[in-house]
Image 1 (tube, rainbow, N blue to C red):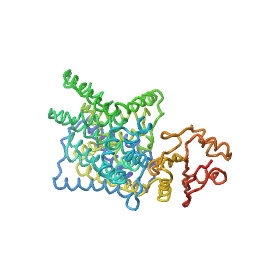
Image 2: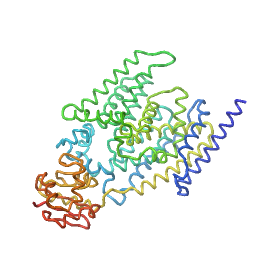
Image 3: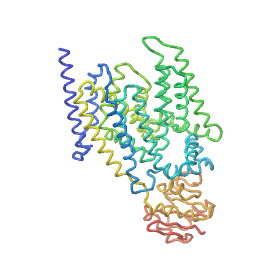
Image 4: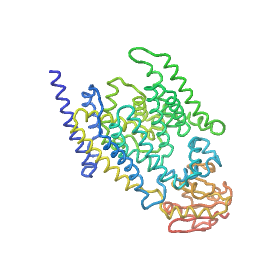
Length: 533
């Protein structure tokens, strides 16, 4: 009777899986709106139904070597292609932070502005991109080199999954990463530091796994060094890694109902070395980048929902990961049922808790959560294929096709945040005297003015030269009173210029009707004024 019930549950699971896959394909084809159904709940129910097959031992899937190589080349090519599409007829870097990164590449280590030292850019990242700038132009670093880093991230996923499972599962993981909308958004929003830090975290965990198998000093050394570099390049990613490794330190020594205290001692020692390596980069001027983290992190635990970071929210994420979500949960359930609580499982659980309960930087950590779920989804797909070879392969093809369609739509719709006329107008600011200050009256243009004007930038709530709070800026934007505007402007040094982009024209026409402002450049709806009072 028990076996019969189990058989009914398994058959229902596969039937529901077929229905789910067809719905996802219809959504990808635009025949259904993805918010039409509670598909994320459907995905969770599917994963729960699938628990019944997680008690079966995974033996791995074998794939012909030539086919394996061909599939690897195809995935790498697709990663490049999707991210190259926005640059086919465009040379402007994607993302809001493009100008900030350009400034960091060309001037970050030389100027060491206070906003950089407070954590605007981590020292390890600055050292890396400054070195790269000796070889490549900043334009190449912001566009094509970032694409190469995205490919390297995919390769990191491949090697990590192969180490925990097998090469076929690794290829599946690489395909899922290729079509992940979240990972594409991390690229299109230019989260450069995130991407590089994720590369380090993948390869550090890879070498940790290698060390667990081989006990070789080389693997241990590479794990410790790469883990330390995570903190040097991106503090939030180190935060996720640090929490995961902290629990790993105490859980991993427990095996076969015995506790290995020698391994515990070694784990703690390795953790101390990792912290020392990361901390060395913050000695001196960069120390305030560490102290500035304490308050927002603590506030994130005391007042959940604050300091979310700029990215999509968790609700949107659930609907952006539908083509692999049930398989990710199934893969995670498999490891938990086998009591394999390794560092990947800890990463997934900790990351999910932070995002779901909205602790510090919760929206931005969706990128990390998505990456680990991509990895677990490959395990889930492999588990299905092992149990039902033909059906599993068919479902994998359908869902990868769905993901590919959605990823392609995301790629062709990705555009730079400013157009060529706006960028050309900002570059005209380079013709002002070298000791000029440029006021970007809207934070929308602030990073671009910083990166492309080659002048000191005043911006609302950003960088080093702002002298006003948000309320004072709002009053300035709407004021028609010359005395009030003069009082605002006189807090800044001269020569002082103002950039007005085409997205601001309707709100800031008052400069044309007031004295003290001389229009020195006009192209389309982009203007540059000189403050002359």
